[in-house]
Length: 443
Image 1 (spheres, rainbow, N blue to C red):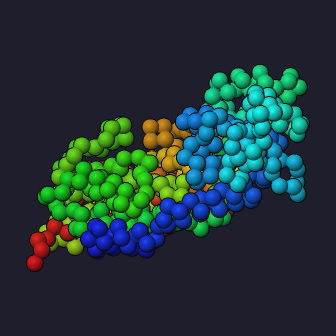
Image 2: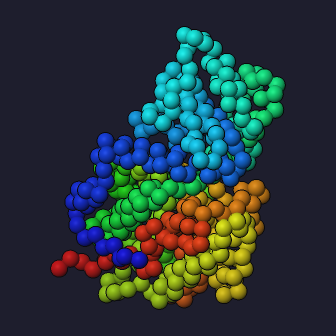
Image 3: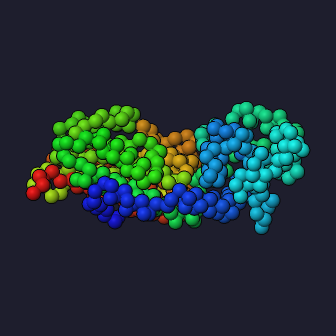
């Protein structure tokens, strides 16, 4: 991992990082290029893999299907009126047909396919578009198990079926696997830029966990949280969740997983000897990061963290290796979880694994690999298989006894990674040593 030591004032940090972030117009142009590539290079193969001839996606304004939000042009903040999209695959060797049964063309990607003056009934116009192409399987976004694939409202589903003749109505099928595939599969152009997001997140964490932001005995955990929020905003980015900063120390209570994961940590003043943890994520180019790292606050005279903490971090890194080495195309999230836990326990590591897909959403579509409160596997979501060209938040913790503190503590790590079908590669490295904050008075 490239060690990130950003020893400049906070505002200077914002200005230097902003140089790597495009203007709103540049972002818009890049998002649209990415979207065009996804429709051209990614979606056709996914539709054929899932044996779907036509995909019908619709949303009323401000009640958007999670999928449709990833298909709208960058200048569309939401659906307009009632936006109906039809994606039809005429077969191998032919491009997808992308139609908008709406009052407007949807950017340059979806051609307007409804003349309201000729056919006032939008549902009838949609039925005509479908019938003219006579698809064998018509997919719509309904799912019992995956919320991100369940974006068609009950009203829309009822009205669609009512608009179709019986012969076509019987061809309507859930788009669950196709919707997940679209959301989870990353394109070549996305992966050219995804590492930039991870690097920006790492830089922000490195500065937050330095003496530029933290003065031991003065700075609180809430101060660091709000510094991260402010810096994200100054960079013109967004957070998809409110960050958390928490402390473990020698004289604190034993770690309680339920308390740690089910409620936000309280505000505390950061002191020498503290082990600080952050959970932080940003959104840029419609993609998300999710990162957790640690800093140690050196006591006066110390130059490194106690050996027990260093060993604990090494155990967590080893658990990361065990987990990612078990990634195999076609292997389910539950199988990856089981195999990784068995191997870790055999090696004397106390594991807790709760890794999730990453992409258009922070907790994204794809296989669930453990939950913090359920290490036995998850039905359906955990049974979903691993596919190539997918991104993950490698999230876990390993609990280790710390002799210097006479207790066991977890090292909770989370780093963003990409699975190409064969190997897992971290987007911007991973934490293998603690960020160090000094407590020595300034000379």
